[in-house]
Structures are given as structure tokens and as C-alpha cells.
Length: 410
Ligand SMILES: C[S@@+](CC[C@H](N)C(=O)[O-])C[C@H]1O[C@@H](n2cnc3c(N)ncnc32)[C@H](O)[C@@H]1O
Image (tube, rainbow, N blue to C red):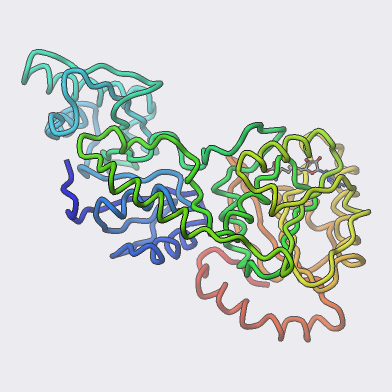
């Protein structure tokens, strides 16, 4: 197992389109040798950085420590390579483990089969060595092992997170279609909200965007409320270091000045607002976020400037005409009621998005679960578009620099 100051390669997994945002987060917490990959960022750091990554990164889904990379085209070589890893370093006879496999390969097509083969290799190695075997526990294992196969390239890693990191510990109730917390945080970071102007989600559902925004504004560590991380069961777990890190994270929290800006959510459904309220109090953020029960058409912009970030219904349960009308009314409400705000909308319904009737100045490709979406920015300017764009030029420049592989400019 890892020594305290041993530098290691670490891999933070994320969602498509959030890689650059995650790389920026990693830079801020002191990661070295950062390399942006597809749905992941690789870097180097010590044990402290591994713990920090789990606690502080808003856009990471899991934090892995790769043990071995190899090439494999069949089950026999897969078994052989995994059996060569010294599993006695991580497991004893009484330990339990689980293997989670992700496979995108012409050589292997069932992740379950691959996990089974990997399990056989681990169990056989330890039984050959000491006559006893560890057992598999899919619910509450001592060790989470990650196996990733992309074509003929395989990586076996220790998963230091366990349950995905979007499970922050604040969600009491989900509602209909909650955004993944990591995606919500990513949207806010992509929008470059400055935490000094109003943040509005006018179709807030269960409140995910509001909670993530309030956490960002208060510098609250996203996983401060989470009780379990897989690394806590590793033989080398440094409890003292972890508790110290938690204390520091608590001390770094600050209460945003509510006079300077507001975080407001609204929804037409009272039921959704009840759920949002439960989640907001679960996160301890009731003092920072306020909720309203309004149709978007009745919601007028609070004084000052700000941004709206929201994901309207995509249309699964609505007729085409209804969804087009909804997006059309979103466009006219923005034009009439939200001057000097910037609206960011996530949707996978490209036809409906055209009915907003405004010209987006930034388009970003993202995925909400399996749904390919666009995250569009609509500046709601007073006067000429040219004047507005000139004012925003500086902000836009930084977008283009940072996300140049994802942003589609008009
Ligand atoms: C896809 S959900 C948003 C999910 C939310 N981001 C979350 O994480 O839970 C869309 C929400 O928009 C609300 N909604 C739909 N039409 C609306 C309207 N015209 N005005 C206000 N809210 C509306 C729905 O009640 C629903 O809660």
C-alpha cells in the first residue's frame, strides 16, 4: 500500500464535456502533471492529494489509483495479467472485494464476464498462496477494484471513492428527473458564474443546481457531508490526516453576503418545491437559497445582474406542440423579463431549443445520463447585441481558451 508521501498516478473520472473544468479544479488543489483524457483527467500526487480529490473536486465521479496497464485480446491473457498483480498487498483472507468493469471493446463484450474472470484471477492467486480466499461482496466490500477495457487496452485500478462522488450525502429525495450533482456543478463552473451576481434556476425541480451553486458560493467542500469513501477501509488509511482535512475544509467555508446577490429557485410544482426544500435543508443551505412557487412567465428578474441556469423538461411526457410552446414562452419571458441577465439552458431537444428564438453565443456538448445535450448561453441584452457582446468579450475569450475542444462558436 501507499506510503504517505509516495507520488502516484491518479485518475479522476468525470462526465463527457467536463474534463477541462475538472483539470482546472485539479490545478487549484495542487495536482501535478495534469493530462486531460476522454471523460477523465490523469495527474500525479500523494496520499493527501488523493483524499483531497475525493473531498474537494466538484466534477469528479470517482478517483482511481491505477495498478497496472496492459494489452489483452482474450480472457486467458486478461486472467494472467490480473493474477500477476500482488493482491496480498491489498487483501487478506477475511477481506471482501467487488470488481466494477467498464468495457468498450471488440475483444470483450460483457462487463459481467470480464469481472468474473478478474475475480477468478484474484481469488486463485490468494488461494494458491495461503489456501484461503477472500470473498466477493457487491454491497459493502472492503476493496473496490475498477477494471477498464478500451479495445485491447486494459487498466486495473483501486477505486478510492467507492460509491460515485455525485452521491454527496445531501439528497433526501430525488423527484422526477434530478440532474446528476456532478453535472449540475459542471454546468455552473462552465457558465463561469462569478458568485457575485444573482443565480436563478426558474425550473428548479429537486434543487440540484441551487444546492451546487450555494456550495460553490460558500466554498463548501462538495463531499463534506458524505460519510464513506472506499480509501477509509484501506490498510494505510491515515485517519488523522483525513480529520485534519475535514476541519480545514470546514474552516474554509464562508457565508455568502446575501445583500450582494441572491440564489433563488422556482418551480410550478409545489410537490417538487417540497422535495427541493428537503434537499436544501439536508445540505444545511436554507439560509442561502430561497424558493418560489411560480410559472416562469410570472417570475420577474430580481434587481441587479445575474445568470439563470436551468434544464427545462425535454419533452418525454409532452406533445411536440406543447414542448415547442414551452420553449417559445421561455424565449419571450427571457426577452421581456430578464434583461441584463445571461440564461444558460441544458436540453437534448434541439428542435424545441430553436423555438427559444434567441441566438446562443456559446454551445457546449454534454451528456445528461445517456442523452446527448447542448448547454447553450443566451445573453439577454438591452440595446444592440454588438454592444452587449463587446462588454462580454473578456469573459467569452476565457471560455474559448479553456474549452476549445467542446465549445461550438457561432
Ligand atoms: C427537468 S426538471 C428540472 C430538474 C432539476 N434540475 C433537478 O435537478 O431536479 C424540470 C422542472 O421544470 C418544472 N417546470 C416545467 N414547466 C415550468 C414552467 N413553465 N414554470 C416553472 N417550472 C416549470 C417542472 O415542474 C420540473 O420540476
